[in-house]
Structure formats: C-alpha cells, structure tokens
Amino acid sequence: QVQLVESGGGLVQAGGSLRLSCAASGRTFNKYATMGWFRQAPGKEREFAAAFMWSSGSTYYADSVKGRFTISGDNAKHTVFLQMNSLKPEDTAVYYCAAANNAPRVAVSRYYDYWGQGTQVTVSS
Image (cartoon, rainbow, N blue to C red; front, side, top):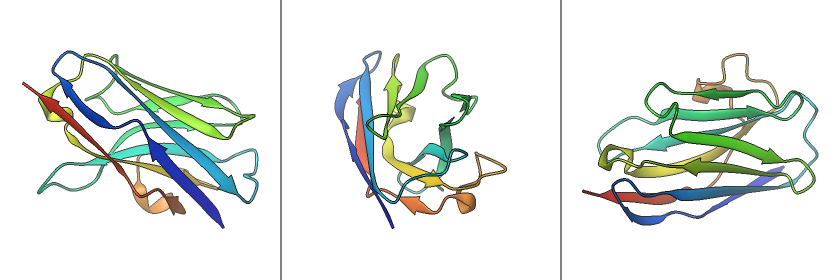
C-alpha cells in the first residue's frame, strides 16, 4: 500500500506562485513508477496537469499549464513537487497527487493506482 500526502495549496492572486508537494510512503516504487498531478475544478471532470517518471526524470505537461508549471522529484525523499507560476483564476481547483506502477498513457487517470486526498488551490482575479 502507498500513501500520498499533498501540501502547499492555498489562496493566491492571479500572477502569483505556489509550490505543491506530494510525499509518498509505503511500499517501494519500481523504477518505472510515474507520479502525476491532476486537478478538478467545481463542476468539471478531473484533468491531467503534469507527470514525472522516477526512472528517467522525464516530465509531461498538459497544454494548459505548459510553460507555467514545473514538476520535479526528490528520489531520496520520495517527494514530488509541482511549482506553479503565473497562476490564473482558471487554475483554481483541487489538486491531486497520484502514483502509478505502470502508466502507458500518463495523462489518463485510470492508470494510476494510488491517490492523495487533494489540496485546494484558489487563484483570485
């Protein structure tokens, strides 16, 4: 079993920045494990934001956040970060950290095995 704990959400003005953290504990990930960030705004479906692969350090981004968000990982601490810059009101959502042992399509939520409880990000205009 894997536990994921997110932190770092909050209220910020448009144009501001936030850094989300996701600490993973429990069973050891295999070297192909993928960590992802998804988000869900009120009344909308959960959508992919970014993903990171431990083995290669490869990163993936949704077009809506590309150039503004940066995902990174600290292997020693099993922690993944999402640095969010130039935030917009449309970035307001609950952000979820997720972990997959094998995600052939990193943007598809059903491939992820474990999910955190979510952290609220609110961007005011």
